[in-house]
Length: 213
Length: 173
Image (cartoon, rainbow over all chains, first blue to last red; front, top):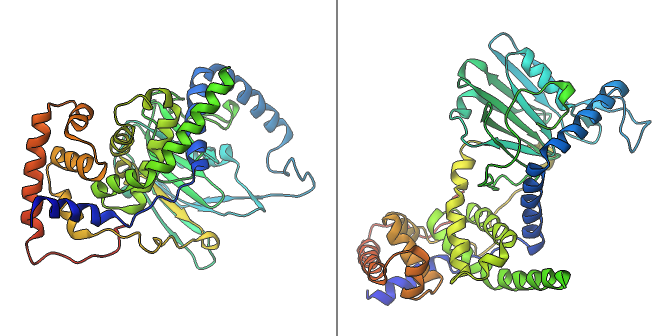
């Protein structure tokens, strides 16, 4: 086997691969990256708007219907059970369910689990604490309900749970309290975190502060 | 005037993407040994290239920029920490399309190379960069590139000539 044979084998080993991601998806990713940069620059203004929106939500009631279909009642998308030192979260998906991120965050806090909860986006921190596998375990029941169990004792000191609730799946990560957060609206699990330090910081968020950390 | 410039950049980028995406995917897949992970990494790297297209388009080897950015993105690090729970109603089988297979014998041999040797052979063999450009991209002397290349080929030949190596199989997931 000469040098060219070796190189030919290297080329041949991957020659069948072709990329299927359309250029529109690349553009969407690029737009999301630009949005992160812009939101980082305008964080103060965004926070104000969100806080005001949150106030109206509290006054108006959050689980009574959707703006598009005011007459249609929505069901709570989560329930939380379990004893001290742990919690079992059940998440449901579908048009009839609506996740109230503040309500979930408060419920988890009541179990001693600080969390950042987002609907349609996911936040990660850099650095990211180790040990998610020890903190979270999950299984799916025969009826399709997904149960996620949290072991509070296994959470590293100073860590929080980040939850991203998407229409087809839910994502979890451990984040470091106070660290810069990198949030993305892309549900693509392969999307790596942004390399820059822009964006918000991981802080326990009260309902009055709105739904976006 | 500015709008025309933006439109021209977009057109240039689309042409670059269409001409380069498969080559970049193959180069990254050879390093990470996971077809889907490679696609995720390369897609992210192209998105970063688009956001900085003015600079990337002037790079001596834009494809190499994409490949190195993809490998630096370290999605493997990300995936180890994230749980994803698809729903029963929405479960989708994501089998690789026919032909999207990796030769695990060669890939395993590549992954056993020191990182710098693997990088050199990826740029030279899969991106078809010459020694000078490879040296510029890596920030080393051309002689260093030639040394890494020579050692990598010797090591690969030794591995590939061993009879007890695994056969071709589907890319790892």
